Image (tube, rainbow, N blue to C red; front, side, top):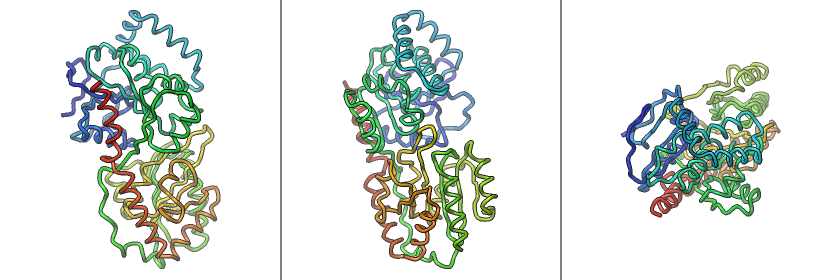
Length: 417
């Protein structure tokens, strides 16, 4: 039963993993919900605690974790009381801020609020058999580390994409790597990145990919083999931000149009880049070919995956150093039978092997992306082979029940201890 608490209900004394997130549920982070449900399916009770969720009217899907919310004023008031009782920890926190000074306003907010939330919630968890897990390396991990220190409990956290790369990553990441029992990440690329940055950190790094709840039905063998002579259906899904490379994708689509290809393209997502994308669509003359769909519910996105001939991932490293890991939409497209054309490098390269599970093309080269599409149009044997290998990769590497089992086992072992 999902419980939405705004006041002070009694919490169960059952041993549980506290999942700390910023918002729940979040349309752009359905993978976190799948992860928690997978952990629960492996016998580990989960409570989700959103740190900054006011005004979120989205209702969690039935059968998920218990959701515990607290009012802003209540958290701040209790935090001040806890800080008065624990002045030495406040002084240590201020020293940590001086040593690992946040570089941006976003970093300041995540660092300070994560600590305030932990001070405000500490009394709720004293005496409870809990494991504390921050889902991201930003405010959730700061809250997990601070709460662990206040309660004398171990903690873990996740480190995946923006929290590792944007503006050099979370400023307290070195301290968190030294103190966490383990760090969860979802790509081998991130494992190498963390070990290169913190070779002496004692935290274990647990590689457990995200995953689909089920493998969808296979697309019939004949489907998609008639690319020649019809309008193709292209899809890209992601927040409208620089690191997703959608402006580069539009350049590739414009090149395809110049070469005479017939297609309809859907771009799912919302974000600050929307005005620039609308202008680029006009400049390239793609108004009748490209649809900006905005944010869509998961079921509608899955329908678009099932209908797409090709899926484009044009991710790049943006001006702030941010980049994708392995976006869940890539394996989702692979599972549904869409052929993925992807940027080189990063976590996506673990799923997309050129000419085996998809095609790699540099999004900065519109001719290369357009050429990849033309190869697919002309070669039905290649399309069939890529589609089959991609689905096999998903079945082996990207099912939630399988991937969360290792994470759940690590959490269950710590709860038992």
